[in-house]
Structure formats: structure tokens, C-alpha cells
Length: 304
Image (cartoon, rainbow, N blue to C red; front, side, top):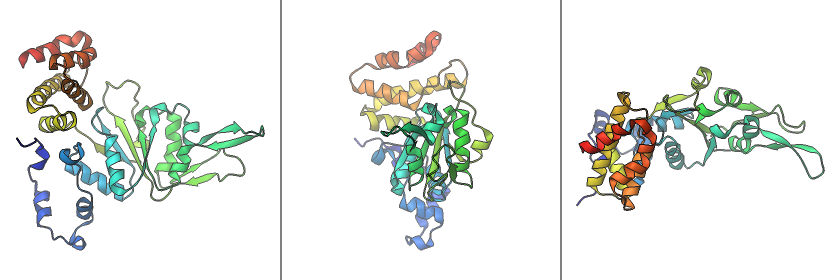
């Protein structure tokens, strides 16, 4: 039986049909067409990952033009993986900084004074400074969890100044560090009221990015991801997707407070692949999130 990979049989849109008709010579292709030809969209069969073709196209264009890119969406939807695929496509190293952990932004983004072996104070430059000084892609992960003074440091890096002032550095060090011209900044942000500890992104910071919004894959694609990433069969994948889709619908209707992520869907699939019954996997992984709303999940299970 043929493996289920729906992205092998896309519903061709106008642009895809037009691209098929384009001559093979790259000299006759537009800028974005040449990028799409050089860096094909990741797919489930080859990459065990799915991204909408138009989203990938936008990411390629923004990256090639060295724009700052903010990727927003639900948890577990692939926001962090996407920059990894882009970096690999462009042959660049991706340096990831967890902005939620940057509770001392000066130390994380600039550096600290330390006492050396001679008992003298010297400035120990942060890895971040070294990374932005070389041709790297930089991911500011969960930027909406960063403290305010972290975003203040980031402002001049992300606008036309493209530099950081090392006001705390020693007198022998360069005070104005430019960003390497090949550096591209990516950032991710979870969106939704259910994410405790997140903040609304400062408008001045948000304006320094082009924004990519990711949506949860269609049930068809979610099913394909389950089969590809966990190895479960079509029947189990179909049941899982029916449950997760029904739970998400209840979230949209505000009858439950938790929105089931793709990451959770995959974890359920992995437990089933490991020999758990589907009902056991649901009980272990989903029911703890719903608490007093547990009857809603039981209703979904009974309806299958």
C-alpha cells in the first residue's frame, strides 16, 4: 500500500501551474521563482516536516533580503524548526537564544565584568556579541517572554543602525559593535491568552520585523505528519486527528480552556506506537490539561 503523503498530490494553484510552464533557465525566472527553484519547500516525505508553500516562499524572500522575521503561532506548530530549515537551505549556522531565560539581558546579550587570575576586572564578552559579528542566522526564541530591558538592547540591532553599543566594556575594547552584513534575525512568539508569562510585543519592536503567522496544519496534513513521524498506521492517525480536531473546535467555541497542539498530537502518536492504547495515551497526555473540563474530552472519545 502506498504511504500516505498528501503533499505529493497538492491542489495546484494558479502560481504552481504558472511555475510548471516557466523555462528551466534561471535567467528567465523572477527573484522569488529562482529562490523557490533553488530551495524547494520542505515536505513530509523527505523532511518529516510540513510548511505551507506560500509561507516558505515568504520566508525565502525575507531571508534573502535580510529582513528581520517574526514567526508567530501556537505552541508546538514548528516555529523554531522553520528557521532551522531556512538556515540549512542557505548553508548558514543558526544560533538560538532563549529569550525567556534572559533574565539578566546585559549578561546574555552584552557580557559581564569578571575578576581575572591577576585579580583585575575584565569584561567577558557574551557569546551573542561574537555571533552577531560573524555570518550567522540568529533566532531570538520566544521574544515575547523577554524582559523589557532585553528588548531595549535589541532595538538598535534590528533597525538601520545594525549595531550594539557596549557601554559596559573596558576602555580598550571597541564600544560600537556592528552586526555582520550576512546576519539575519529571526524571532518566535507564542500567541494566545493561554500562554502565561508572555507579554504583548512592544509596538516599536514588532515594527522592526516582517511577520509570518503559522496556522495549525489541516487534518489531512496532521494525519500525514503522525504517520511519518511516529510510524503509526492510517487508522490510528485518523482517530487521533478526529480527537484533536474536535478538541480544538471546543477551544474555539470556548467550551474548554486548552488548545491541543501539534506537539501533543505527535506525543499521543508516539505513545500509541510504543504500544499504548489510544484511550491510555489520551488519558496520560490530554486529560491533565483539562481538569474540570474532563467531561468534554470523554464526550469526544465516546463519540468516536
